[in-house]
Length: 338
Image (tube, rainbow, N blue to C red; front, side, top):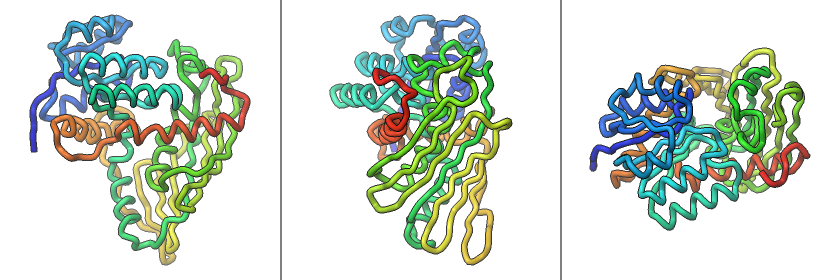
């Protein structure tokens, strides 16, 4: 296996970038040589963790001057496509935070440039590589519970007005692209797709029920999804709960079911419920951020090295945007030009 070291730059030094920095410092083939943010306070906080990195406030200047080979994009959603395309056109591979773009059309523009330049783009659907997902995939693939026939995904979290107003970009369709669908529950939708496969149809609805005085994006959504293999799934997500409750995904088989509950996987069969495994917390920070990032980033760097390893290619990440867009079509909340 090839193991060349790569020089890396991080664009966007908000909260999620700290997880990227910690992950990059944990793998053995990455050196952070540049960081960038338009806010000096965030730039200085990131610099404390990687003091040898050059500091930029203009990402275009970073791309022009830095010798970074891989670019991590950790910026607000509306900048993802622009920055990913600019990075590839400057000769870099890209690790891109979710969502990969504001809509399916933007994602296709990124794919087109990837095809043109030969540069790779990994989307950070890191929950595909956590322990619970890996163990559930083994059980599903070996057929011990029979055919996979359906699924359920539930996210009931709490987000108050300050969450939207303090960021400067959340809560607006033109900058965030959406609310609970594009942000909090996108990983849950991705795992339903990851297990159940290509989507045939989506019937759903999205609404703004709680924070209508400070935001325009949806805080509640639901959907009924049909997959091409004949399976179906129901999905519900809201930011209107009074607490951040457990994220639950359930997969239904002919002979039982698998239940993801936060960081635990349970097997339900033969009248028994047993714990299969737990996710270890590899990185500091929120559990739903840290557990899989180090694996996805490590795999992506191995792939850029020319090794045949799995990572979430952008071509396999756009299906989630298509699901989300179909849910929006069942509502009148998101403008058509987003």
